[in-house]
Length: 143
Image 1 (tube, rainbow, N blue to C red):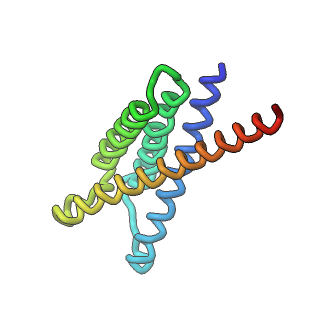
Image 2: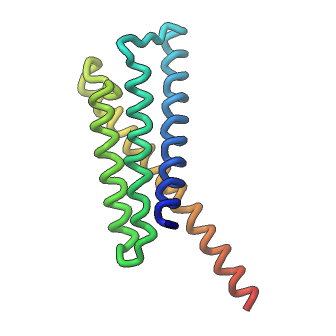
């Protein structure tokens, strides 16, 4: 039961982060387009669903970190591999990779997503490492 709760929790956090990034990017594009950021043919709905699926792609595999038999490095490679695969599949379907803008724009988008994903992963890793350090200090203090 705890693992299911952990999956739900990490998935919810990942979906929230994905949606937050989606909204921020949408605001940036709306500002860059001077208020002419238009969508048609259910583009917003498709992008919102892709955003949630991307969050699940990064959130669900994070359960690997709680399996002691799996080294953290391997869990990281699997989680990010699944997350990025889901993201790039969704991005290709809904048009987040600007193919019409040329190769340079596509490469910058892909690199930007990798960088953002690694930064987010690093922030979570630091948070949980600091949490473990604080817990260990508290255990030592109580003994």
